[in-house]
Amino acid sequence: MKAARTRRFGALLAAAAVGTTFVAACSSPQPSYDGAASILADRVNGSMASYSNVPTTIAEALPTTRYVSAVNGDSGTFSDLVVTGRFTGWQRGVATVWPAGGGDSGTEVDWDDDAADTRTILLTFTVDSTVAAAEGVYAARELTVWVSLDGGVRPGDVGDGLTGAGETVVFLRHPSNPSVARLWSIAGDGGFVGTIDDAGSVTMGVIERADDTSWLSALVPDVDGLTIDALRDDAMHPTTVSFGG
Image (cartoon, one colour):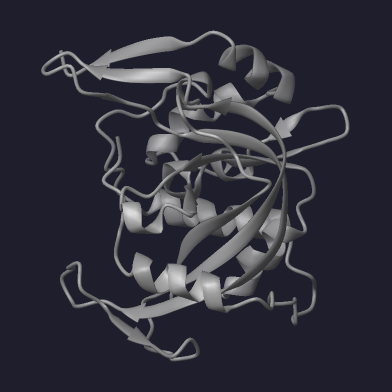
């Protein structure tokens, strides 16, 4: 459904395999989930969604909803896996300078280089339960989640914010590049992640911060009063959405 970014994924996987020490928070005050959600919302608000179709409800974002083209019958899902658990750590990925005017070939630079246009982080997510999964997709006990950030963002604000978020639900996608099958990305350009309180209520902090021009804005009313039980119930009722006809 989404034209997945594959730029520098090989380098990212190498970084994930080599680096074993997670980055600790070093700023004061401690970065928060709300701060991380705001940064991810700014990222999604400023992006042009490259999906052939986008969900209009949270249920349609589950991997149990299949999108089918009315033109040629091609089909796919918006997410591949939805799990609960916790982000338990993060490490540096790759800093990159991209050519003016766009392009798929960037130049890797030092992590602290002020010229970096993007920096990536690799988060470890420890899974407690699977809410929904696409056919043939299974969750390991620990997953590595890739997030790309604008070069002007302090990566620790997102990495430490998410690792301090507590119990979390996250909608994940596999990169389309088979050489990096061990990595996941957060569905919807980073928009589909939320916290779960003791009563089971879900706060989709990124979606709640969507501006009126964002493709996520249609989902803002749908996340009010969302619970993890409702997500599990929706996942028990597979649906099909036709598009392009």
